[in-house]
Amino acid sequence: MDADNKRDMGDTAVDFFLETLKNLLTSSNLDFIIDEKHQLQSLADEIKYLRGFLKTTEKKRNEHSEVMNLVMRIRDAVSEAENIVELFVVHVFKANHASDSLREHQDHLSLDLESVEKEIKTLKAEVKRILDENMYDINGVAVKKLKHSSTGSGDIGTYFSVFQDSKLVSFDKNI
Figure 1 (cartoon, rainbow, N blue to C red):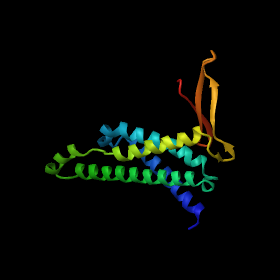
Figure 2: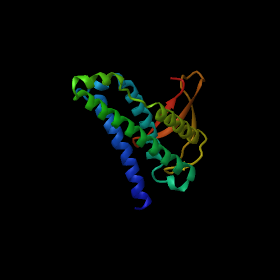
Figure 3: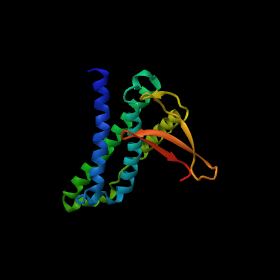
Figure 4: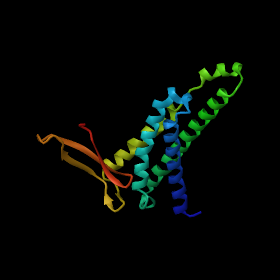
């Protein structure tokens, strides 16, 4: 399998998991996740941010070993998160369809994303550092810190530019 196909499969796996999270969050049939909805939404938001970086680096990631390493670590973390979420859903489904005596254990089921959330936050910080330090020319556009007056009063806000869903999106820390 060549590097391009492996990259496409890895990125597709991230997209597939984001779609799974979206379905879990919007399904009216899945009342069992109501207590975990905030965790799942937070996870989806973090992965969307990382997915924007994957999309941005798609064409040039093999040119920079640090970026390629980060991409692989992002995929690994997303895969770990997917395994945790799927295992949780299976356990809850089984508990909901078990006898009454086994349902007592359902109260003890919880979605434990703590370790993977920590890794994802670390990865997100690395992505921000790469973008902030203008370390690489990604997608033919140097990704760098932009300065912009957000209030018109001379107050300078810091923007981090990232490509997300094929569009340039800026995040103002002053908002």
